[in-house]
Length: 230
Image (cartoon, rainbow, N blue to C red):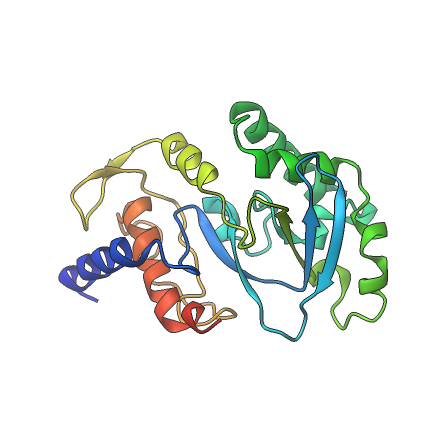
């Protein structure tokens, strides 16, 4: 794909970014199996089983979690049960998830959505609260994706407070080879460009594409290929 085509994708993203279902920066797409509704205090209200409905959520992530394979790298809020469930056999993942969320909430206290999820997951009540939905679930526990929503705040799972915080946090360590702007040049880029389960990558380590540019290009392609259909 040539440079002009990539610049056109950036322009396309900037034009559609406010449309429902388009990933903001520092977010990724996640298939939802169980949705959990909380109140602002972090108390459990309800849960619903979305398995088989192909429900796709937009969820906050990091560079590492969006591109993770076998490494431990939690998303910020919604993630699979091995990260958010407090399961003893996945304690390392749960601790990494809590530590990241704790640091963010303390440094960005205005984010009510994140604070609510943080209060809830600390209680380690999730497994009990959704136990009836887990009984007949076809997936093994570590593969069940949990999406959190807070009543009155969000139904989609996106968190623009996180976008603003995370993009500013990234050190501008180079010049993007596409835009010519100073940007953070990541060590890894996400896969799943043309399908939710694909492993294809548009950019590889060392390509010199900046984080902001890569996010816009990849999310534009993902939206056109599969997210706009959900």
